[in-house]
Length: 251
Length: 165
Image: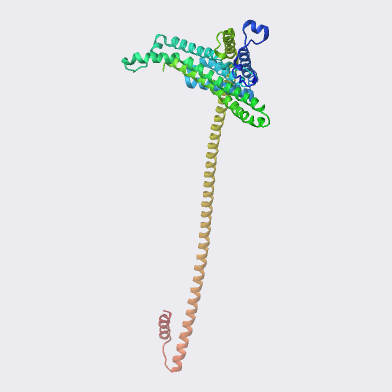
């Protein structure tokens, strides 16, 4: 995956290949899935091992687990309202899964499963199906009134209804593309500048000095990517909450 | 871009595994991990509420005790003031009675002394009149005027009365 000659292989890090040897390739278990399992195990470890003492005054791990819980709980209640509490486990799973996927991807040699549009779209489609199912279950036929806002003049209906339907259908696309594009762009940049470090270091005497510049840039980029990893997980979760609010309250 | 290589069969299997892993994670978190956190948070909230209630009760109790103490202090002060006032009135009455008795005794002594002085003066005045009478008779005898003793005594008395004024 490193630079071969003068070529910059920024996309090699996104290639899927079977993980876990023979068994993995037999069931189509990929490196992407391996990191999903890592993320899941780490999340469960944090929430179960961190809470094992269930202390009245939390320690560091318990404090982290409780902060994560409180953060998403507050978000769900603030965005959806008290009746949104039953979606809390879903939003929590979604947020933690994406956050851990993004963060794990920042480790060297790790695979970032959120940098695959198919994965992010699958998650966004799950949200879309859930939101639509909740809206129809709660409001039945009235749900379709969502596409014609109350108070709008009737003669605007031919314009408003298609626009509303398109904007509703484009939610999973914007949701998935935002996460995918952010993660992919960040990892490509990291790879490109990392390759520059290696290439410049090979340029005779001044090379190692010059290579310090992309190295410094990469250090800043990693810090930025940590921010992006958190921010994108947050955006995904809060947009899910906003969609759930629409589904529960219909505007 | 490897992400758009839809001909790769691993793309599909990755998604199937994604749903499996995500579903398992959701199940574990929803049915086991998250309720435990909720219990801990609820216990802590209940504990904090109970402690706050206890603290408020203790505060109310303390305020009641303080009010009681203030009332007791005020009552004690009023009692002490009443005692002090009574003692002062008593002492004043005693002192004024004593002063009156002393004044009465002194007045009696003064009266007695004045009476003695008056008696002494009268006695002195009587003696003086006798001396004046006999002196006046002697002077009249020397002058060769004879006058009855009664008339001389009356005249001396008159003069003495005028002189006493």
